[in-house]
Image 1 (cartoon, helix red, strand yellow):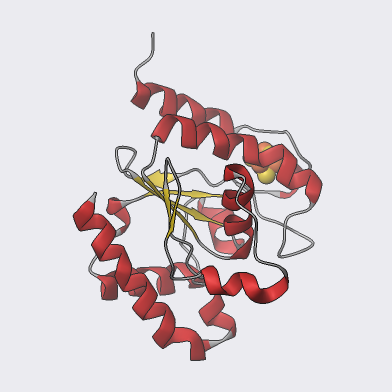
Image 2 (cartoon, protein in one colour; image 1 turned 135 degrees about the vertical axis):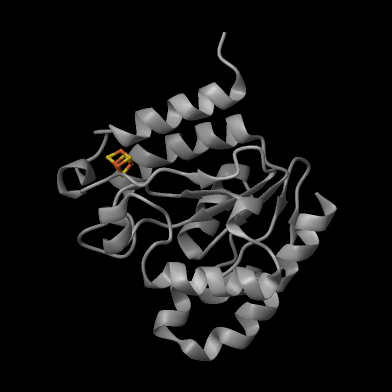
Length: 194
Ligand code: SF4
């Protein structure tokens, strides 16, 4: 019987060669989860960008630079988290995943949650937050009011959910920097408590 670490490693190998949706035809590399597989803090980003598609590594493009700055300012590092994406291959036509891509790829994420057994789930951005709420059967605030979730904790029986804005948001709106920095600083508290 495989250990949990071996099961996680095996899962990552399966993701690397996944052909469940047409994105496998346009990707260079599926971007595998990384970070600390023993961490109980699971961070879920949306999907790889162009740079990540080439490197096969999470957060290696412009949003990765911002991501590291936000973590540094918060006093935490990538190795404090298990990092993964909602969609593992680069989206080509839209910044949001289609229903088909969502249905094909999220079973990988559900399997990751089952294996990692996080205590805290930190979705980055709207799509990842939508997934976590749907997965846990939590109603989503209507329309754009979902934004009130960012930077606030949601306690469930099994998990603490802490939605944050995706670092990419700062590429489009640098004015959000101050509030995002303050929200990311709350990650330090999670690191200490867990
Ligand atoms: S996006 Fe997900 S489901 Fe589609 S090919 Fe990549 S890993 Fe497989």
